[in-house]
Length: 333
Image (tube, rainbow, N blue to C red; front, top):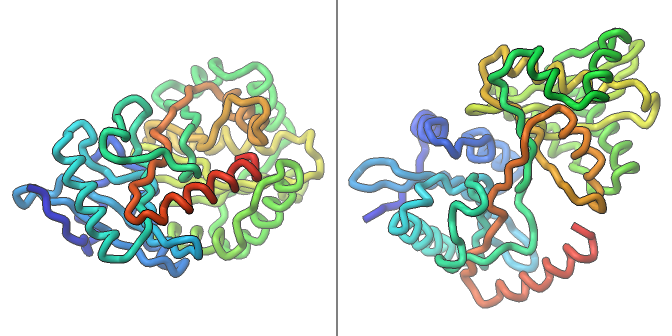
């Protein structure tokens, strides 16, 4: 029998998460702190079997007019091949959500498509995504020369051009540089037509993860002008390219290529196993198809994680399901 107990010790939490092959920064201790700083209620739930910790779930309470719910990005981290464990964990989550008077639970485990059958456990595919569900990943076990040789020809050319142009790459710890990221993100929004993150959201994330040295803000400058900036998370086995922005000016200067190659080399030197380019699509009609082609040019492979699934708690969930399905279609998500 599995029992649920809140974990309040950072070492207990991090040691378990980092020891799992499902390890990801969305279930890190500091992702919880970050959400707390954004005024979300969080619960770090541990699952114990005969006194041994066998699973964890970072649960974030999302308050919405249409119905509040629990969100678990990148988790729960449990043995998804153990049917009895899955059933017991979902039962405990449902009990907790009932106590909190919530409409549903939304999860997006860090497991691959096809490795688990959600429908057998009363889970329904969510009408909305929960963080990147399809990603592009580059293994870092090859030499720099081998990595370059596996890149698309124009990507190698852009990297060499960046070196000739003396594009300056620097790591910034200044919170004030979040203003640069925000402004450049807005310029990117004009080109790609997506909803931007708020200045507060970006600033708080940088501040929270910098305290643990789990994030770096990378700037690329040409002739003294910052043309691109990106945030990279460092957690577990991988470095993750998360947020970025680039200027509408001097678009021919390959600053984005310079940032990526610099971070790939740095992550490799630091001993990380892979570089995760985050969101990816093969759909030519998707607004992020261009950035996806850019990522693919560096070599690597596609990973399809199990998409977000919902565990209904109240009948009102189906009204929410209908509303979110309609919103997704209207926004072409």
